[in-house]
Length: 414
Image (cartoon, rainbow, N blue to C red; front, side):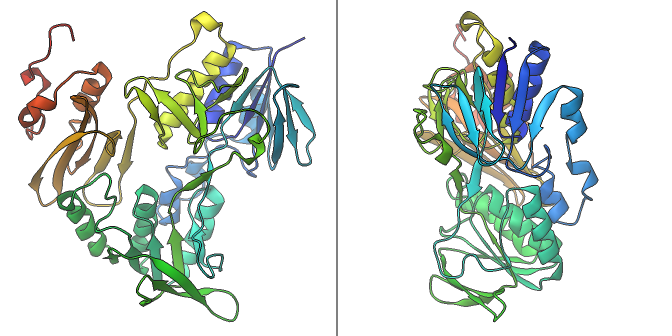
């Protein structure tokens, strides 16, 4: 009897795992279950589609034929209701029961909705799926005014969409700057100026009390924390994710703002693994549990999970990865790497009106950073993170505009 592998979720993590398993086990039964109505697409490019920069065609990564050619059973529009870990079964709403020898959870999350009046009105958007992007593009093309809420990496995508679609938008942020956990005021000022140039006005140290709608239920205005009213035919909300773990109740799988896994992507329940945004994984470089929502991280987690699902216990591979996340909305590049919002020490430098750099350290070791304007040093910094070298006492060298790692005095054993 052939082995059976079931993957819940067809994002880049789930798809990478399915491909890895199929290559290693040509005769195994492999099924991918997703509640979406289309196969894998590029989540990075959907923001360019919503900005009006790309047609739909380049965004799809795998057509349904891709799965058929690899003898992978793709189940679209399929909702998982619960998992019976003892029986090794996945139960769905209408598509029956899937038996598994090994199971991968890769269901990501669902955008958090604002707990205010009329937050479900027409014209209020969350940005996560390709279908979300289609609705956003359609609404933004027709809207003259807009509001964006959420001072993070998804929020700025929505702000950039407004800028490209000529929506006169206000960007409401709770703190005194965009991405206040990753940037200082100096770094954020570069982003604020760039937003203004695109016609997006930052509204700092504020929040949202509610929305006004017309008689047809369409949003027409946003009320901020001071009850100031902003006309908004378009609203984009990006205030975080609720991870899709409801169906895990009763399974025994440990959750803590996501699914907890070790460095092998394995949960506390035998034969159940997890990968992608949903994981709270043990990071062997950071030496603590962490989360990461980047595309590259999710893809690598899926590949590692797939390898370990088919491997013997003594052949399992650790997930060891330095992630990065880039923004291409402005005339200058922006890139974050590693864990720039964590650490116990930091340093930064501003080199010009559009060039800034910040590095974060933990226990003397570099663990992350942000580069604005010049992202060329990223590879050198990532190497230091991978090699876990103590360099926090050499900040002057690290912050040199033309950083040369050969100038660092490194311990001989490293």
